[in-house]
Length: 460
Figure 1 (spheres, rainbow, N blue to C red):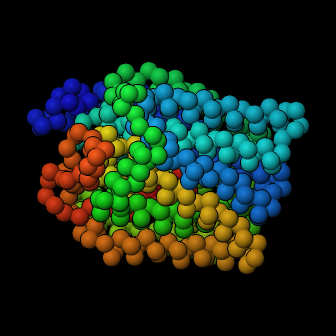
Figure 2 (cartoon, rainbow, N blue to C red; figure 1 turned 45 degrees about the horizontal axis):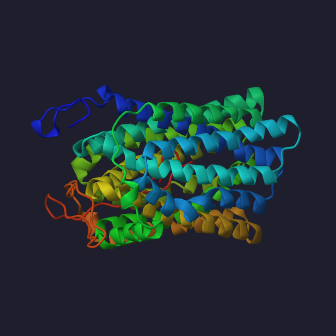
Figure 3 (spheres, helix red, strand yellow; figure 1 turned 90 degrees about the vertical axis):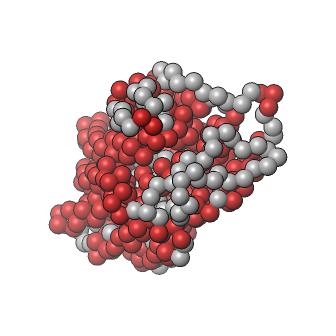
């Protein structure tokens, strides 16, 4: 059944906005994204301006925030396939809210330190892994698979708008309340997310406890499942290589803008907000672009454009003109991210059986997230050794790698969205990749990572 209770096969285009559970899901996740954009803008400001963090300390802060997904993503995915996804999402939200609330409390007591920020980043990262593994895999339970592309398009566009609002709100709250108390906006967003998630009424079908096996066995099933399907395997490889390159860039991006280019907190938030508008435009355009040009060529174009968007950053010097140039380039980068990320996420959801959704997502998250802390440490070492700008040049060159991976893959020729697999989850004894019911054609790849991760795994 579709969101409005009309079977998708009867040719009616039901309105997703009439789907009560989808609205609740969307509202809760959008609130969380808004708050996360606040902290993405505020925490670098706290570290660099309030606590005078060095290049190496900024790299360590980024590393600790990105380490939990690399360590816990596979376990979180297996737990989400085994237990209630909604309860796992709510738990993650509440833990994140508690961790972030400690920062303004410590600031009020004049006890805030860089060590505390690092601990908060690690705890928030771990809680976010639990939440995201369940959140992404919950969507196919809420809407018919024929509506997944439209659903992901609306989710991506609304999340981008929420990220824009969050960046601008973070800048405003920082100016009005100070950076530490501005984090209370993110605390509130997690509470709103937990509230709306708790109100979702769609039934879930977690496996009974008597059928549960050891977690490592189910994790192994997820790894074999992704490796055994060339579409999922290629999408994940492109995601991981892009994530590594962008993580290297992102580690020093805020430091470079705030210190080398002398952006203030307000200008920094505005630049992030401008870029997030591009993600909204790209996500909204994704279905029509994929239908007109084919998902494969569209993904290939997005990956080709992404390295070019770094050129203004590399050439920039302090001044208002360069601030606008960087904002425009970020707009284009995130437009590619919105279009490609929405499409590749839909493909992975469509071709994956119900009982493997969370583990499939977790494998991708594990590899893409695992690349980030390594890249963060590499960025810190290179930034200290050869300087920030040369390190950014290296990161830009690495963005060519996923383009080559996709270009050498048959997935670049995909002209139509693939069909759905059998709905029954694979058995433990004979786990095989899903077989599409539609024409056998390659699938697209090409998600690239967003500057401030406003969607779970990111896009170009």
